[in-house]
Length: 311
Image 1 (cartoon, rainbow, N blue to C red):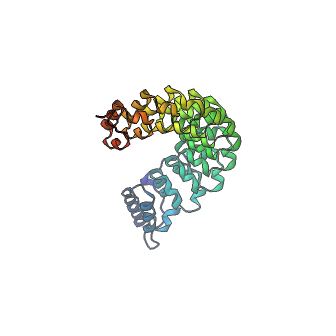
Image 2: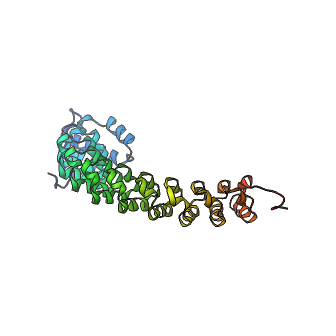
Image 3: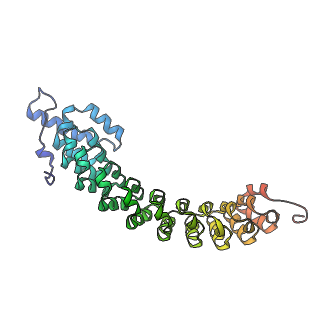
């Protein structure tokens, strides 16, 4: 049963060697368990272990329960009969939710098994039955663990505000996979860009020009300015915030701000080579020039040097 306590001393034994006595078989199984303890937790080493081990161990329920409790993905090496065993499946997905991939189809439609899987690894939602990919609690659990799991949610749930908000708060890029109506929702988009400024890329055009949204995006990641549009690119506070975080964001600023000394100074102090994006007048400005080369000597090549400014 699922609640049974598994103890090596009470291990039920399938013979490893048909000629061995029960006592000898017990010793052999314990030896294989000890051998598994030395196996590193990667799928290639586990695969090699099962190549060496007697095939009978793959169908030994108590042996596999102990194995998957340590390394859930070992479920993939279990005999097909155990892939239909709920207790073995639960033990596997609780250790690594991705083990749901190898469960029998009936277990992929079992709510308890799937909930356990997505609690451990949200992306296990991909392996769940379609009926559970459309289950609100299951999907909410999945996206709280991994925002990107929303890509596997049933269509209607991608337009569920609570689910979408939970997803983008966990991973701003989840905005890419939500219903288009959510991409016009300012609260959703703000949450997304606060988690990852580059999520601005997936916002509706109207919000890519929204000052509050763009400012939040560049505060998190300066180069998110590349996804802004309209008046936001000519807003001095927005652009200053962006270049202070990433000087090369100056490239995406409105031309008027590439000629603004405050903005350009902030940019070159963060990244000297951003001098190449400044207006010519500032590339020839002595204060800007020295700030740029102090930050990065190679920015010298982007300066405009003439005898009037640099006698």
